[in-house]
Length: 456
Image (cartoon, rainbow, N blue to C red; front, side, top):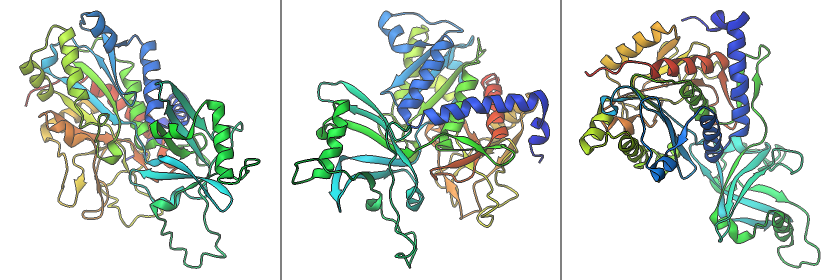
């Protein structure tokens, strides 16, 4: 398979790739939490004429073909929907990504003192290699809710007006073992080293808490807070040729961004189309904002009701007749660590969007296994749009494996397949993707949104 830079390496085609990825880098640098991603999606959607579904329900407005709506779930998941010409029960073309990424979270009582420092206690989220989060600049992003319901948004450690945070490592002179056996309870940030004047106890902690009072935040308010510890700094070009992007959260915000951008260009589709950006995939899609919740199903029901098309049977038919791309990244073959990969069947950077017919582990345990009839139609759709794609797996048999939201959506009886961008350094604080893969994935989703829905 050809390297896509042979196609996009110069002229107007290269400019399209670079311009698209410049905007993506801005998104990735700005949106490091689920809430920030949802706010961005809403802002972009409203500029394109999408209306808030909650407002339409309250006003009892009717929907018709071509109308665009969005629905928000607790500010951490969002769905965009364009009503098609065909009845919704004929099926929906869905692209679903997740917007949570591996990170550290602040505990409910995060501040304590040790050896003349104020420290911040954390609990890691998702599958991380703990040692990778040590000895690098970190930032705090999130929200704090006071008892009166008022909210304070937090973004500390990104700019010079506030210092960054760090988890220290033991110097090599004293660490003769160097086994990188970091425990979860060792992931504690240094928050300060100045004592509060005229205080006898907890004076380092109290000085930091005094600084937080400028935001009108008290220590107890962190019980009703959601603060995420993320790498500090912007996404940036990678390589002398600037062909790649180094950034935090490519998994899965690279697919989420491509999904959103493709959706914003949809106008008057034959079949209804849906862009889904959800939370909690990295910890099993659980909770009220994960894919296991009823948000997706309930929202489709509400849209059908405003279209004058809702019945319980009609909803079941709509879900059963739908097609979906589970829009998630996969592991790209890493030249530094070739042995865990099957280089003939695994994804490579700069070869286009990667399709995983199945995920799971070992004997496809926990997998969605896509139907060949659906895959054949997808191939035809992408070939007609001249989209480059690769059929891949994730590592050698019994070596690799993983999961996405695909199996959850497949329970409705719809056709589902995983497809997204190959990534190096996956789940590390800084991940790597190829710019041409980002652009080609956007083109693939855009083509899929216009694909005919056929019964099998």
